[in-house]
Image 1 (tube, rainbow, N blue to C red):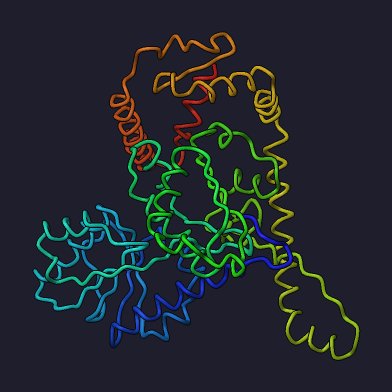
Image 2 (cartoon, rainbow, N blue to C red):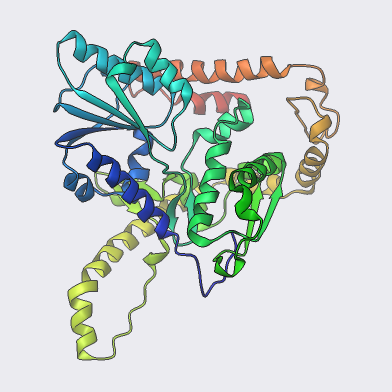
Length: 419
């Protein structure tokens, strides 16, 4: 999204809207209640609603949804805040059936984020618990991570759309963009690049309908919207990141704007979570005694927090340098930026529609992909990917049960493959 730098859209209004919607839902459930959270929603929820707001809505206890836990003890009213996934529906059905078998009476409510799916209702009905549960939805789609960054926080979207060809989340993307336009005005110029982005754009236009016939563009805070389908140049997402935040993500992982530093950075056994934000760099102009008093009263504590964050960033830089100054990283960069790599990538992108579903290109075989010209078929390839993913999880679980002395499985396989 592009907009004026002087009148940048206040995206925090989206957070306020989601927070208000959640508060209204919880207020409609009268009395004391327990909240069971999907693990995928814990950090996104923290960005829009804090513990204080939940306590004000009479939330007594907060539980993490654990698929291995067949029952949860708590008060007489329980609220589930979850993604609309079939596996989580089965877990909730088990909870209800466990309570019924023990003659425990409760009110059950499920809030699906960002929307209800009919397949989830079918599972609850198949498990025989639909009559005991009330279903709601909370349209928490785009979450402001910073003043100029919005994220859907849907890690399953990439796999679902590109691997499984599942278009379930396309409507969520379109509605999230409509919500922005409801706050900032109809965007006059929308450009789409790639098939996926065109589907989103068309769906968005169909939902908006007559609102596009004569909108007042003078009230719009955003001038242009560019939708880019990652599939048109997917290889670039696999390249090494060279910005500081990108290196942090590669080394430690960033989730919903938060980064977690371990003992190698903090020097302590307990890990530390840090929120990445453009507000980290603040300048203070002190021109009078009154300014100094205000600074001590309101902002000195913030400076102490910034000092602690700075020490963590210094430790993170040392860890990154220790990993990235090795010869392997330099070799990766040389390969990514070499002429052979650029030529192979360019040819692959231009001719992707005519290539087989699996295409292996090397400097010795840049255009033909002899190894995958006829096989595997898309169905077989999809099954292989799912089978390999499940096998890896089983092997890692079994290795973890043996003990920490066993070397990392993936690292061992990569070493053997390279040799």
